Length: 459
Image (cartoon, rainbow, N blue to C red; front, top):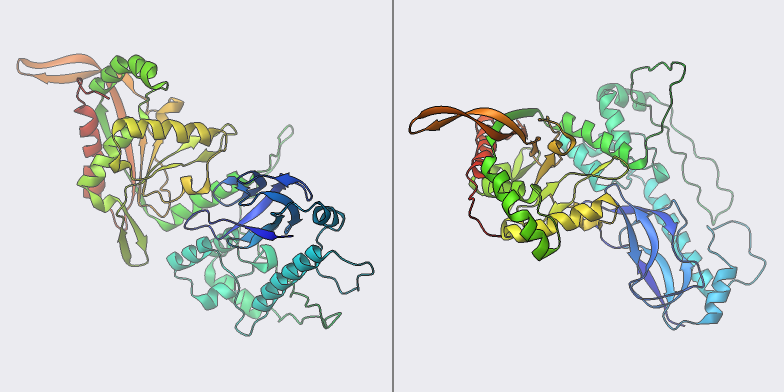
C-alpha cells in the first residue's frame, strides 16, 4: 500500500483556510488524477479540490463543515489501489480521539489518520491555552486589526465565535461597531474562566469560548404578512465587506458625462463580423476596461493600496469586474495584467470569466489580486451610481446606461443640437490617498479615451 495525502491547496494571497462543504467521493471509491473529490468554500468563492493522485480514496480526514488550513491533508489516497485497504477504511471511518479504549482492532490506515487528527487537535488546543494566550488569526482579521490600529493585546481580548474560539470578521467588526473602549473594559472586568479538570490525562479539553456580544442594531418590527429571509453565506460576507469598506475609507465620488456616440457606432459596425469570426459577442465591458487601463498608466497613483501610513504602488494592473450571479449575489473576477492584452484578448477574458462567474465556476485565484474595479450599473438600466470601494483597493468606477439625448455640438460653423449617445461615469475613491484633483482627472481621462474612439479601428 502506498498512501499519499491530498492537501488543501493554496487558493489566493489572502486565503488561509477553507470550509469543507460536501464530499464528492466516498471512502473506497476509485478516483482518477485531477478528478474533483471534495467541494470547499472560502470567504471569497466556492470551489472543488481535484485529486493529485489516482487510486482508492482510503480516508476523509475531515467531515463536512470542518475548517481546514491551507497545506493540511484533507484526504488519503492509496495510489496502488489496494482493495483490501479500501474495504477496511470504509468499514472504520475516522473519529475524533476519545478517552475510552477501542475494543476491536483498527485498520493501520485508520489508526494513522486518527493519530494525525489527534495531533492537529492537540496543537490547536495547546495554542489556545498557551501562556501568552495566542490564537490563530486569518489574514483578513489581521488586516482589519492593522487598519483600525488594534494591537495584538487588544486583539487577544476580543471574544471569538469561530471554530475553537477564533475571532472572525464578524467578531472584530462587531467589536469596532460596539465601541472599542467599552468592549475592552467589559472583557477586562469579566471574571476569569476556571477550566474544569481533565477527564483523562490523555485528553485535553479546550477552554469554553466566550460568547461575543452582538453588535447594536436597529429594532425591526414585523407586520402581518412579512416574510423573514435568512441571508446566505455569500450575502453575509458581502454585507460585512461593504460595512468594512465604508468604515475604512472616506468615500468621495466624482461624475463625468461622456459622449460615446463613436464607441456605439463602432461596436454596431463590428459586432456581427466579430461574432462570426470569434464565435462570441463583443460587449462594451472590454472597451471600458481598456480605457480604464490606459488611464491607470497615465495616473498610476490610482493603482495603489494603503497599509497604515504607507502607500503601496501596484506594479500590475489587474482590473476586476463586478458580475451578478443567478442568485442575485455579486462576484468580482479579475482580468490579470490587463495592460498587457490587446482588445481581442481582453474581450475573450471578459466573456470567459463572466460566463463562469454566473454559474459559480471560478477558481479562487481568479477573484484575487485586483487593483481596480469596474461595475456596470447600466446593465440594470441605471443612469449612474455611487459604488463602494472593493478593499484594499482605493478606487472603483461605475458606468451607467447609454442613452440617446440631445446635446450641443460645437462645429466650425457654430453650435448645433444633435442626438448623441451619452453615458455617465461615476468614480468613487479613497480620500485618504486620492484627492479630488486626481480622482476627477482620472475619470475625465477615461471619458476622453471613450469619446475619442477610432471608428476605423480593427479588432
